[in-house]
Length: 133
Image 1 (tube, rainbow, N blue to C red):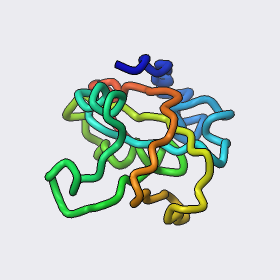
Image 2 (tube, rainbow, N blue to C red; image 1 turned 90 degrees about the vertical axis):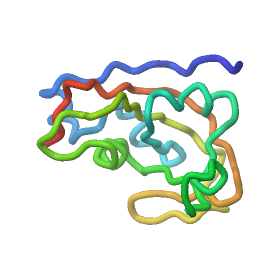
Image 3 (cartoon, rainbow, N blue to C red; image 1 turned 90 degrees about the horizontal axis):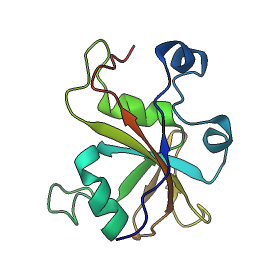
Image 4 (cartoon, rainbow, N blue to C red; image 1 turned 120 degrees about the horizontal axis):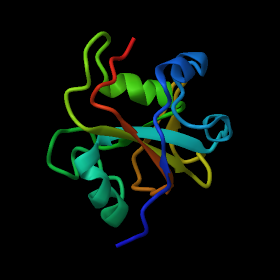
């Protein structure tokens, strides 16, 4: 098994609001090659061992790419419904790509179709008590 990524503490509500709902430190959030992927915490070991896989590869849907948000607030919003507590144990994984040239990059995210695996540089667990604004 690959080594466990660095775990980042989920910010306090005050710090989270002040940081624009960014859950990772600014050097990661501001790095053009760092992206964020939200998922159920139970998937982390499989991702560490086998890499990120599309819904199609996992036979859980038709999507044949893996999506990564450009900033963590987008990943946070992907798994949190406004005004409701988190209904499962989720985490956000911070990853670094060597480059983004071969991938479809949009204003808010990037879609990887060719199986490129980024370096996992950290995770932040979303507390089940968190209520997204």
